[in-house]
Image 1 (cartoon, rainbow, N blue to C red):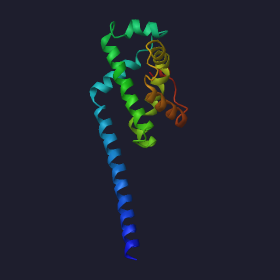
Image 2: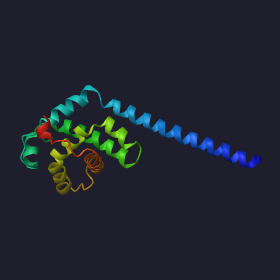
Image 3: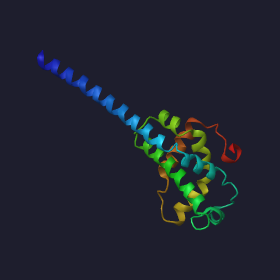
Length: 157
């Protein structure tokens, strides 16, 4: 009887510890995301949503590339890496998808991916970086599956 009671107590303790760890991980995700809600995030996002006047990746690099427009290029990288981070959290199951989409709104994720997908594919193909922004792509696919009605970027701005 005593060994069985000991096993039950240990099991309850284990379940409570597991729940606490999961909640702690979720709090950490929220804290990390809150760091990106600074003014620099807002400026970077506002900058890249206006990058709609390019026809193809070569044209984008001429207008917004790292040598021709370093600020626009760094804003692009900042936003792409922010969404890539969210994709890593989703892919690694570090956070619940519903929480991810509360922190990284699908109406931002979907239009940004769809607008810049040709550029991302160009970078993957021409710079020998086949894994470039793969977690962001996974985030986009999950968002698109859950929220298929979100319009493209050109109709958002």
